[in-house]
Length: 440
Image 1 (cartoon, rainbow, N blue to C red):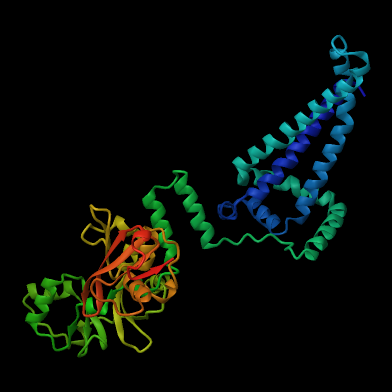
Image 2 (spheres, rainbow, N blue to C red; image 1 turned 90 degrees about the vertical axis):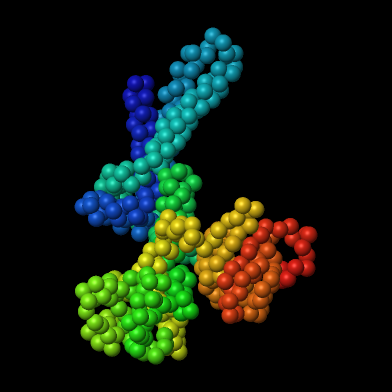
C-alpha cells in the first residue's frame, strides 16, 4: 500500500477511535434531568438517549468492539507506515545495527501518541464539556451501528449480563434522582460560585420541607391569639391592637374547640362603617382547616394549594390544639434570613462570639448554623428546647447546662416550664470536664 494511503487510513482510524471515545463519555456523562428537559422541548433524540441509558449493554458492546478494532488496525497499519520514514531520518545519526529497532520504537511512540491524544483524551474532554448536546447528535449513528452489529452485540451482551448476574451486580442502569443528589448538586454550584449563598440556602430549605414536620414552623398554642364566641367588642379591639395579625381563630370556650377564623380586615371594615357584629354569627366566621402535627411542611403546602387556604389549626392525636400554621410560616422557613428582620431572628450571635437562641428554634436550623450534622435522635424532638430536654433528661431549670461538641448550652430564661432563651458558648471541653451533661 502506498504510504499516502496508509497515512489516510491511520487518520481515518484515529477519527473512528475519537468517535467511539466521545460517544462513550458523552452518553455516560449525560444527566437525566437535562435530557428530560430536552425531550419536553420536543427533541426526539433525547428520548432515544434516555432509552439507551436504561439498557446500555448493547451500546457499550458496540463501543468496545469499535475501540478494540481501531486499536488493532492502528497497530497493523501504523508500524509499517512510519518505520521506513524513521529509518531514512535516523540513518545518518543512528548505528546500523540499532537503526531498525530505534525506527520501530519511534514509529510505535508516534502512533501511540496520535491515538492517545486524538482518539482518546481530546474526544473525551470534549464529550465531558457538553455531554447532552453531543450524545443527542450521535445517538442515531450509534443506533445504526448497534443494528448492523446486532449478532455480535447480542453475544457480548448475553455473556456480559451473565457475568454481571453471577457477581450480583445490576444489568440495568439506575438513574433515579434523589433529594441527596439535588442537594449535592446545589452545594457544588455554591462552591463553584454559580449560586449565591442566599440562593443555595433557599434551595436547600425547599428540600428540607419534606423532612421538617409542622411543629418546626407553627406558632405554638401558648402564643396563639384567639377569640371566643362570647368575646366582647372591647376585648376584640384590644387584642387586634396588641397583636395586629391578619386572621384570628374563633373558639367555643377554649383553644381546643376551634370552629373557624375571622379576618381582621372584615372586623376593621365593620368598625369603620359603624356596623355591629357578633362572633356568634356563623356567616361571619370562615372555616379553618385542621392538620395533624405529624404532617411534613411539604404536605401542608400541598393541602394549602388544594384547599386554596393559607391558614390552618394544628392538632395532635388527641384532637387537642397544639398551634396554628400559615403559608407565611412555611415561606419563612424556605427563605430563612432573607425575610426575617433582626428582631425576628431566632439565632443571634452576640459581640462576644456567643449565640442567643430562642427555645422554639427548629433543630434543623441549629444543626445548620453550628454544622453539627445530625444531632442524637433528632427525630424525637423538633426544637432546640426539645434538644435541651433530651440531653438533660428532665425539664430544664434556669442555669441548667451541658456541653456538646465543644459548645456549652445553658438555659438563661424559663417561663412556666417552657425554655424561652438558651445561651450557646464555644468552650474548651478539657477545661470544663464536669459541667452538666457532656455528649460526643
